[in-house]
Length: 215
Ligand SMILES: Cc1cc2nc3c(=O)[nH]c(=O)nc-3n(C[C@H](O)[C@H](O)[C@H](O)COP(=O)(O)O)c2cc1C
Image 1: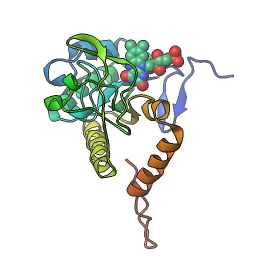
Image 2 (image 1 turned 135 degrees about the vertical axis):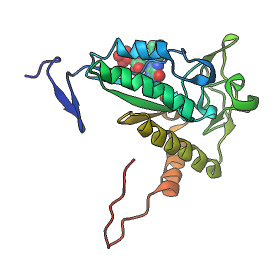
Image 3 (image 1 turned 90 degrees about the vertical axis):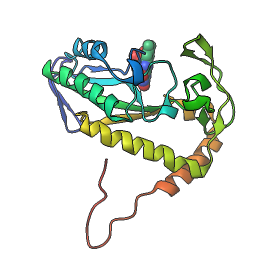
Image 4 (image 1 turned 180 degrees about the vertical axis):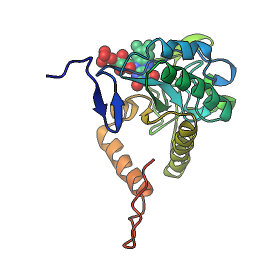
């Protein structure tokens, strides 16, 4: 019977033990939403876990939902994350990134130019978020149209490619954490999901070969 301190595998990662640290948003970035030395220290102190899932990191300015959460959409932020990853790896740990778009769990004061937050529906979520004015009700979102979705998919893709440069080995997605399933009527959500899948289905590999490249 394996023990929690025994080495194990998770996909193609070799972990020194079975302990995985859950992502924990800490709202500790420096100006520009750049991961800093305090964040590196926080993660380094937990490097004894077999795997750390980083705190959620927004894939775009629009994806920010809370004050001072780290971004992954420009070079400065990725340099900050690289410091975090290097510190964890130097301490013998492993870290993967949790990419995030907070959707409607956000407030206009956190959005670029005070623009509306976005969501699958134009209904405000019941909940609060943390801003420079403390905890406030989240804002009423703009309902995304289908032709706006490729932009968000592209933001995830861009962030994922930057993360590879930032020495993170894998990432895991989050959109407002459990936002869609929790807050959108199931039938409506599923209808949208089917349409989104159709829109973004990768081309079938040709008979001549060339499998689909995963990210
Ligand atoms: C302060 C705090 C920050 C959190 N930040 C994140 C986050 O960034 N991403 C995420 O997916 N979950 C986040 N969570 C959820 C936790 O990762 C975890 O899933 C939750 O605390 C439930 O854990 P449990 O099932 O062991 O009780 C956060 C929870 C807390 C309390």
